[in-house]
Amino acid sequence: MRKAIYAPNVHRHKNPIPHASILHGLIISSAITGIDHKTGDFPSSKEKQIKIAFQNMEAILEEANGTTQDIIKIDLYFKDKKDRKLVNPYWVELFPDELTRPSRHAHLSELEGNCIFQIVFTALLNK
Image (cartoon, rainbow, N blue to C red; front, top):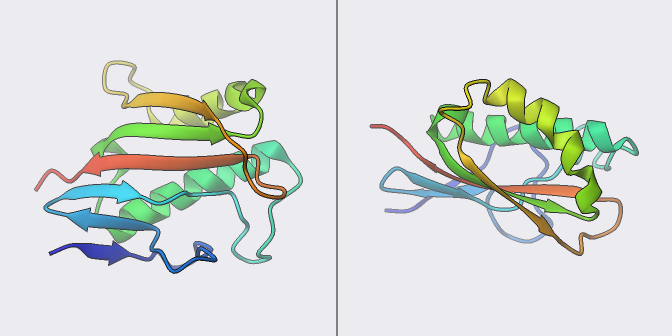
């Protein structure tokens, strides 16, 4: 049976959707943003938004009893694809071994308001 994942301390979507859904060990996330959970706003700093988005991704994985090592693919959605270079420091920190990194695809997207970046991941729990 499918299970909805809601991570504490991660801002909830304005629509009635979970942070992620899991079925038979396969986890697919909804859009994960860099909204600061404490303020409910996007930080003005692009780097801060990206950092929070990756922290939120990790919190969602943890809530699903997974880790970043379970990720197969990450789709990155940018308001401005020039911001891809801002992701790389977090990417290398999360996935230091280039031989075990998940696949990644960057998309140009019309993101709402002050949102500059979103993550969608696919992971498979090794159970």
